[in-house]
Image (cartoon, rainbow, N blue to C red; front, top):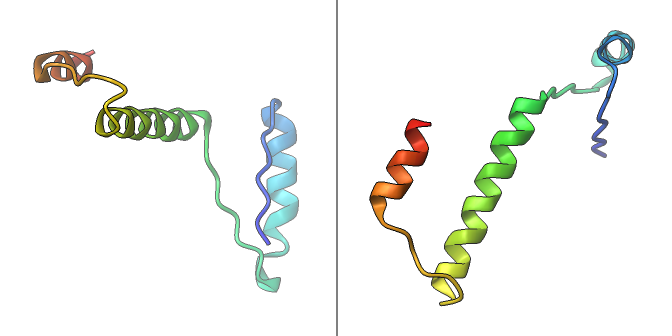
Length: 73
């Protein structure tokens, strides 16, 4: 079973992680994502959605220069 939990309070998150650490020997695996990870994953998913729309002909592709300019920012 896998459970994802999003904490708004860093102090609470640290307390829960501390508690979960005690269950590692019982097979609990802790995988931490921070908000930056979420942003990267969401941007990747958006990019895949855009590629699929282009493949379906529902969106026209943009010039490569636009893409490269976005990478610089």
